[in-house]
Amino acid sequence: MMKQKKNREKAMVIGLLIMFVLIAGIALFPVFALVIASLSPASDLMRYGLTGELFLSAFDFQNYEALFGSGETNYWSWYANSIIISAVLIVVSLFFSSMVGYALALYSFKGQRFIFLLVLVIVMIPFEILMLPLFRLMTSLQLVDTYLAVMLPLIVAPIAVFFFRQYAIGLPKELMESARVDGCTEYGIFFKVMAPLMLPSFAAMAILQGLSSWNNFLWPLLVLRSNDMFTLPIGLATLLTPYGNNYQVLFSGAVLSIIPIILLFLFFQRFFIAGLTSGGVKG
Image 1 (cartoon, rainbow, N blue to C red):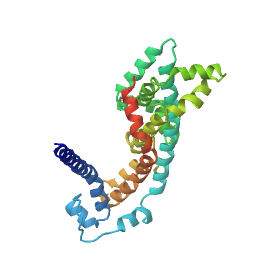
Image 2 (cartoon, helix red, strand yellow):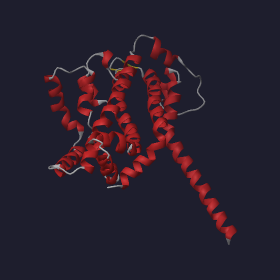
Image 3 (cartoon, one colour):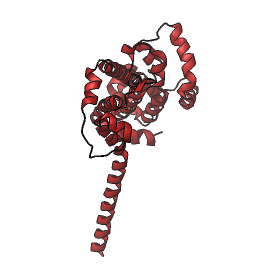
Image 4 (cartoon, one colour):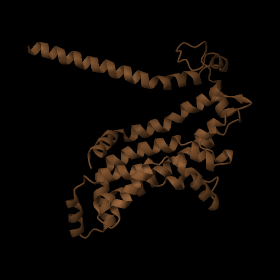
């Protein structure tokens, strides 16, 4: 009986491994097809499209040479703009959103429930509805075509506030009382005592906010004007014009655009799962 039980468990583990490998293969196939397309000659790409064909007639690195050396693109400027905007938004957004979420979770004050309800309402409103009034505000402030215009409406993310509130509500309040008895200020309690306990939530939100900022397209498209100020998604989109579509160059740029997100995930992956599961359970 014991041997049969062990065999069943072993078969179950092997079955799960096969299933996970298949799911991973399906999930990674679009990335694989993108890489293959970026190495395909333009003629093959136009003829067959995104096939994911492993055995190409020839691997062509001219797409990458065209991306960097043709002078037709401003790729590094777009890349730098995206990195600057995403990095600043991650830091600033986590700073303000965590403080708001922490205050909503662990402090009692007048209007607390109303503010939390307001956060939930804003979470449910699509950003596209808010874009027009926000654009008029940026125009009146003369911020169009600046980094500030891209970042200002996004420095406090409602979904991040909700996430931090759910995480912080499970933190022990006794630590706050002990810190107050020791003479610590309220800001000191947050930065020295509570924020270190919230590191998994910071890591999870850093990845999600970074992904959101890196791929953001509509709002930067609305407020940015000059080619030198474009972010990577907008810059790559300019390669598709009514007079000719440089899909092969676009795919090369898209492949390289994945690298920062992969590095961000690898850097924070240790805390990512713990942060998501803790934030989802507590409350």
